Amino acid sequence: MDKEMRAGPDASLERRRFLAKMASAVFASMVAPGLAQGLPQAPTTPLTPEEEDVLLRMQKELERALKNPNRRWGMVIDLRKCVGCHACTVSCMAENRLPPGVVYRPVSEEEIGTFPNVTYRFVPQPCMQCDEPPCVPACPYNATWKRKDGIVEIDYELCVGCEKCIPACPYDSRHKDDGYYWTENTPGQGQMPYEELPVYEWGKKVNRDDEAGPMDKVRKCHFCLHRIERGLLPQCVVTCIGRATYFGDLEDPSSLVSELIRKPNVMRLKEEAGTKPRVYYLV
Image (cartoon, rainbow, N blue to C red):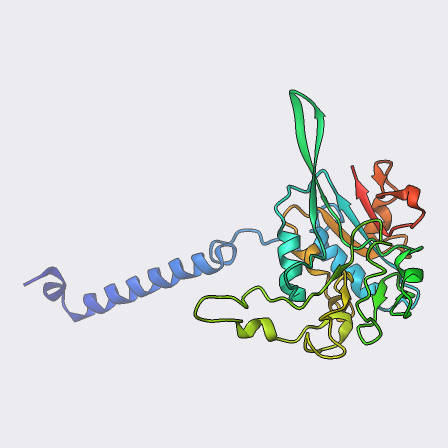
């Protein structure tokens, strides 16, 4: 006869209760170690700007900017943090369902330094959303214009795909959608159904081959307008693994982007062209 039976039913019951309490304590310590062990909890005081993740700060600033009718969107990219992972490029292609030949946010590579002290610098290049956009007067159909919020927009219903705006852009930010699909020649499958899903550019849900869709038209980056007008940051911003891309209202002097463009190490691409781009770089 084992010890538990010799000790009687009361001892056996007490032993089971003891084990149940121990199991509960262990589980509680795993779920809420601070509560189970009486340890101090995380501080409830607000984090300082230095302690807060920049994504959280930009999200709050975005919500505030949407209430400002005079908002003017801008972007800052820290080239010291960009590692050339192309996550922004890929996420942008997925978000906007971009076809072959259309890239809204390419990342170019520059070799800098003198041998043997040579390194690479990676330069993401979205549409610069210029304040003096040369693509606008180049369009003979008034299909592109500068919005009040700083974004250069394209009306797909007015665009005829003449491509006259493409060479006018000094940043190569515009691309023609020639109607190709990534999977149209997939062996045994053909074109995959997910490539026929609607697009949401400019805040409109349309099929790609509709009259109001982008097929056979000129396309470009729009700072994910369909996201920011719904309180979401641009896709390239949230997927940047190095927190190298910043977005916000340049009309708000307290915003992160306004703070960054006041740095002494800020620059813009091809300023000599007089386009006044609203994308800034930290070097």
